[in-house]
Each structure stands twice: as structure tokens, then as C-alpha cells.
Picture 1 (tube, rainbow, N blue to C red):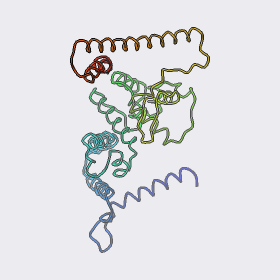
Picture 2: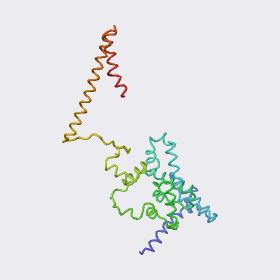
Picture 3: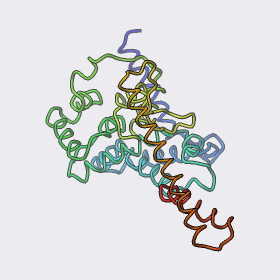
Picture 4: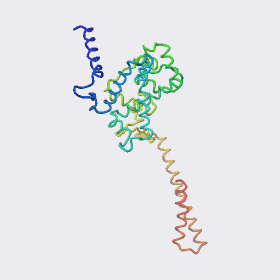
Length: 303
């Protein structure tokens, strides 16, 4: 069987599947075949059936607009996910937005965040007056990290370079990141790991390369719960073979500290003597008063 025959067979089988919508009444039954099917499949099949029936009477323009709408429906999806996340609509049923994504709509949370960000890109382009925007979430995702001015400029460059029907994710990527982006080398990792790295980079406002570099250099660490933590570099260094100059400097610092402590002790004894000479207070109270004045007060001031 040659390729053309295989292609005709493929399209024929799929057309027959869609034709089931027209021949949906079962023998001796009034209900449609999807009446017992669970949501969301039931709703989508009912909607498809209505589209099929209305299509007999709709004008081409109506159908064209509907097709265009469905191609960019990722915007609606992103807004819906954002609503659930921002207003915490999940809180009565799920512990977190992550749990909602994974258990409620079968999305990994990083993927849901990507869809939200992609919808934001599309809305910015529409607001700026573009009549042609990324036709799917994969295309929009490549523009997420661009600031608004750069976003508008790069998207205009895409439109100036390619006809709308020739715009692909690879061509957008080439314009946004440069033709030679992939010449730096590649790292073979599982797709899921790569996507998680991209999501972490998106959350922290960095490129994937910057994020990986900071992790390798010890500036960032990713905890077991997925949170990121900046590492503070220790300023103190261990010197195995200090120079004579370093030893002299340390001795000077130690002597200065000892001198300061001796001065504090002298001040304490002088104040104690003064208090004993000029007061008839109990000795215990005098010592306590001098101790508070000479030792605790400086500590409290330092804190």
C-alpha cells in the first residue's frame, strides 16, 4: 500500500468517525449514543453535534471566525487557570494550586503556569493592536521571557519575515533567540526534567542557562519541595599557612580587644568605689547597679 492510499484510508476512517455524530440514534432508542458518556467528553460531543447541525445553515464567515477562535482558545484556558490560582478557588477541595492542577485538570503545575504566561503574551499583543497573534500555546510560550517593548518588536519581526500560514514555533524561536542558538551545544535530558528547569527559570525571572549556572556555582539550591533558596557565601576563610604580617595583625587585634575589656573592668571598679564612698545603699545593690551600668548597658546598645 503506497503513501497516497494510506493517507486516503486514514482520512476516510476519521471522516467515518465524525459521521457517527449524524447517525447517533441507536436502534429502538431515542437518546444519542453519548448520553451515558462522562464529562467533559459528553459536552464536547454535544457541542460538536450542534456545530454539525448549525453548519448546514451557517455562513462561511461564521465558521471561519469560530475556527480562528478555537485555534487561540489557549488564551481562555490561561485566564481560567489564572482565576483558579489568583482567587484560590481550589481551597475548599484541594490543598494547593499544584494539587488542583494535578488532580483536578491533570496538568503538572509548571505546565499550568506556562499556559497562564502564554495567555498573558497573547493578550499583550492583542492590546498592542496586532491582528495576528501566536496561533497556539507552543508559539506563545517562546515569547514569555521578553519584556513588553522587546515582545512587540520581535513579534513584528516575525510577521515581517513570514506569511501567517508559514509561522511555526521553530521560526519564532530563530528570530527571538537567534539562528545560532543551538550551536552552543546541547544537553540530553528527559523532556520532563527540561520542562521543570524551564518552569523554575520562568518563576525566578532567569533564562534556563542562568538558572543552571547559578545552581552549579552554588549560588542557588532547589529544595525537595521545589522551592529555591539563595546560598550565602561564607566570608571567613581558613588559612593553613598564615604569613608573618597576618599573625602580627591578628595579635594587634587581640591586644586591642583585651585592652578594651581591661578598660571596661577598670571603669567598673572605679564606679564601684565611687558608689561605696557616696552612698549608704546595701553593698549588693551597689554592685548590681554598677554591673548593669558598665556591662549590660553596652550590650543592650549594641543589640
